[in-house]
Amino acid sequence: MTAQEFDLVTDRLRGRAIFLYFHLMGEPMLHPLLPDFIRMAREKGFRTVLTSNGTLPAKAMRLLSSLPHKVQLSLHSHESNGKGILADYIDKVMQFAIPAAEQGTCVVLRLWNQGGRESENEQVMQLLEKYVQKPWHERPDGYRLCDNLYLEFDRKFEWPVVQQAPSSSPEGEGFLDSIDPLNDVFEQKEVTKNSPPRGSRRGAEIFCKALYKQIGVLSDGSLVPCCMDHNGDITLGNLFTQSLDEILDSPRAKAMVEGFRHHKASELLCRNCESGNVRNSFRGKPKS
Image (cartoon, rainbow, N blue to C red):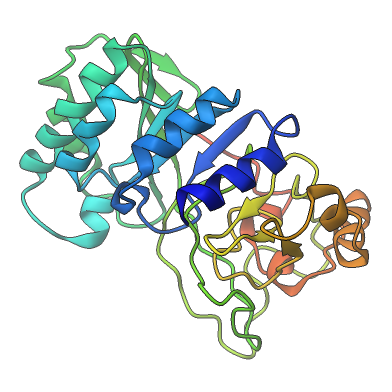
């Protein structure tokens, strides 16, 4: 996405959204204009939120002069990717996280891997204590380590998939992302032809705030219902050429909203999404 395209999209979203999240799969730190985008969005009144795997410390440090409202760093990515020494990774993360928090940015260190690869979690917490000594303030979803710095736990996400249709978005993964969304980059598992939908067992109630509290915008301007649709399987329109109202007034968008009101999903991707299952409301660290 170019600066001109970002300017156009944010103009069309101004006044309609508060939070602008830079994630819809992919690593936003890779975009060369990220600091400029954060400044542009802030000048238009958005609260910007950045989600990163924390593996690009040099690119992260450049944001200290243009910090977003909130930064979410997915510490679980280290064990999932299996690269480098954990202590070195945590050191680089904290070299950014601590000064960012001191400047007033809310920094959330994520361990969203419950039920997945979580063998490093205890070691991660021990390493964090070297930078921020205990006691930590306990919260329902983790800990407040110090002012503006948090450790957050959650279950492992699985990206929902559709089985038959390729992406209808020519560029696939996006950069400018969901507005007031759910969240991040996790392992995607294949669904076989005869597998039941992961997130919606037969008879399960489905509900989502897509198109009501959140949308997603891919790098080619395609508007999708939420941050889970990184492939553009449910492309409802394009903000490069259409207004938000025009897109939300389309029959397909209206059918989605009406379905959620009755705990139904009109789209296959939504039926396969674990986050849409009303029963999956748990969030936070495991009970001891």
